[in-house]
Image 1 (tube, rainbow, N blue to C red):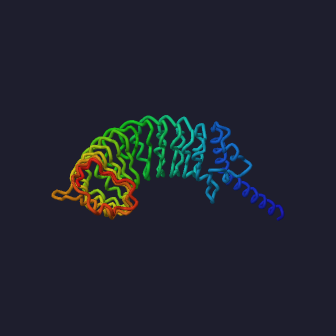
Image 2: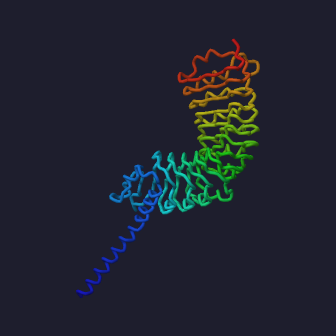
Image 3: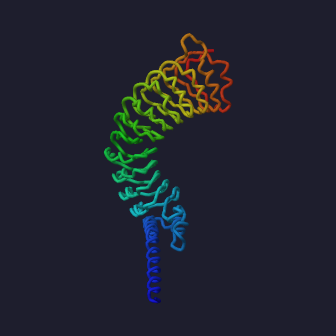
Length: 373
């Protein structure tokens, strides 16, 4: 009986020990990955060389956030640290990682192919480094990604259009100031030296919040499908070669829109009245196009508007009217700070209500507007 009792006790101890070893194993994986990451940082005077030591739990290391349940690394957040070196492929071992932010450092070399193993990654920010090479195809298999920032690196190459279908939850992607070339993949918004037309099925990105194509060589019309993405907060196509008209329905399906940036294109036609249905609009920039007709008289409905730039178009006054009546409406925009109407053949008188414009006005430019009186 006593032998049986001892045997059972030994089995329980063995089982408990094995469980402890099993539970510790993932933690050892994370600490080894962190030390490998640290090893490839070449400036030994960095803060990490003193803070990341095995004398303390890695969950207490600077820039590390662990999950409270299993003590696995959930976040690696090291922006603005002047870290120099290469990004270690060992990051692939952070199987619970949801956020990786290494922005504003001096990382160079390629983005590790192993990054595609981060199956739970939600936000990736590698902006403002010296990364080069192409974005690895494995990157496009991270279906959990919602926000990607790779701004201001030296990334090159072109995108594998068929691969981007994996980014099912994408909300924001900003690849500005790189060397990526080619046409826009039909399922991905980009900001680089891209030409060609904008694909219609960009409108299928139903969770997208920011759509940025500034400073490219895009041609053709802006697909109407884009203006049906109700989640959109910002639309930016500044300085391209886009032509055609803005859909008359602009604003009807965009309840969350905060900014429209379409300056320096070849857009034409009238500015649609329905634009004021985008009630959350803060910035509206349509300067230096070929818009004609009158300035919408209902812009005052945009009560949150802070920035309005319609300069450099062919906008005129209401036929038969002496005063610029649309300015009466803008009096209701009590948060307006910048009002730019320069270089339009407005041809009219300023109304007395001009003195009632928002007290927050910092710039009111109407030069070369054929103002009378």
